[in-house]
Amino acid sequence: MMSGHYTSIDNQKVSGSVPAVEPPPFKFSVSVDSNLQTFPPSGAQGKISGGSRPPRDVDDTFSKSGSGSDEPQRQSGWFQAFSLASYKPYFDVDTIDVLDRIKDSLCPFSGTFNEKTASHPDLYGPFWICTTLIFVAASIGTFVTYIAHKLKDQEWNYDINLVTWSAGLFYGYVTVVPLCLYVILKYFSVPSGFVQLLCLYGYSLFVFIPALCMSVVPLEIFRWVVAGVAGFMSATFVALNLRAHIMSAGERWVLIVAGIFLLQLALAVALKVYLFTVTV
Image (cartoon, rainbow, N blue to C red):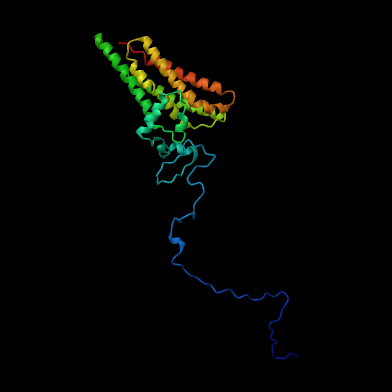
């Protein structure tokens, strides 16, 4: 028979048994001087290398953000082309900057315009140069024809087509031609920026403003000379500033530069035929 007493098992190792482990005491403390009260972290903590620069594979044409803007840039790449904030840096110029770039456009043989504007191309100057050309072309043509009709006692009617034709010519040329050239240079893997091409072509048209003003002289040969000189200066300005960049396209760089030069001369001929032809 078994005894009524139980045998105590004390500190015995039984096969398959797991010794009991007591959990450590749980401690919870709140530090008054916790770093969570400082946001954002000061110093080098929490910084992301690279700052606010765009990704390397994104075209830098529309990737500049406006300085001092508190609104976060939610868009990237080509989507920024539809945001007005993306264009703000290209209009952030003063009168001295615009005048200096206009002076460079009147000295076409220097060929340093692209280097000077590489870090900060603007669209302010090209926009107002094109707008001024439209106003000058329409006003001079209208004024000369008005005087001619009054001297002959003829009825005079304002031709609105002169304004629309001038606007389509200048705005279209300064937009379409740089865009086509940008695509061509991308095809040949030539480094270029679309905004920088817009800036270059916009300032290249400034020489036509004084040329249009001199077209009031009622001498056909003089008007051809003025149009030819203006076209040559504008074409030389564009070709020499792009030559250094296009030379990396290989042997075809000569054809590209020649095409740029001839296209600018063709613009001068078109201006002579449609805008410089005024009679008194």
